[in-house]
Image (cartoon, rainbow, N blue to C red; front, side, top):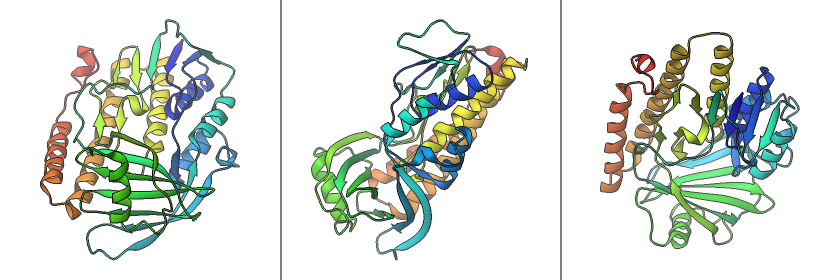
Length: 328
């Protein structure tokens, strides 16, 4: 018996794959996810895992063809081909839930299980690699197929059209603002995006944006996936990818466990795979930010990132079991 806690993209995907492999799966939690922007690689993975060659799961999404980028003060803007789809998260979650196999049962209270998959977001059990936050809100925006991204003196801003005159704007800064609505409106203008954003931001939220990887990734009887184990910096432009990939990897671990492979070897492999991916992500973040930000706040962020990279490279494997913890 497998119980999956959390019915976002990672939880739904892992539940589907485990059930397809013959396991009895209980899914705890109502399907829910935020709006997503899926790049072409993420679309291919999603539609392959969910057996959707016609990409019907993306019906109603807003097609994007390119990304306009001005990265750095005085930089020449560049527009690059970047096929993607902006997807309504609630609609996608409903579509995925309808495609779950019959072996997936739904329950508010999860029963005892041989293995638990933690896919629901949880408080960080170790510090993130920085203090930066993302300030996001919905805006009215001209319908276009181009997303826009630009730096400002305090951080960077990305505006993504969602279709039907709607858009999502996100600003990342190392210092949480006292007035999030005013800050976001000012950053839109500072980034030169006022010509595309035609109304003030609404429903503004402030959430952590620094990368984070849990030390507790896999142990006997439990594997964490998606936002329960990993958060990437929004500069990567990838939110769905880690959710899908950790779900696929965890389902593979469960399948190999069923086939008799040693748990210590499989859990250690899962732990190291996530650690290596996180190290590469931190390296990319540092390169992007070092090119354009030199103020004291961003210098502090880069120092924390460098410290996290060094710690991650030599971090021991944590699984709660001595035999796995010894596998570095």
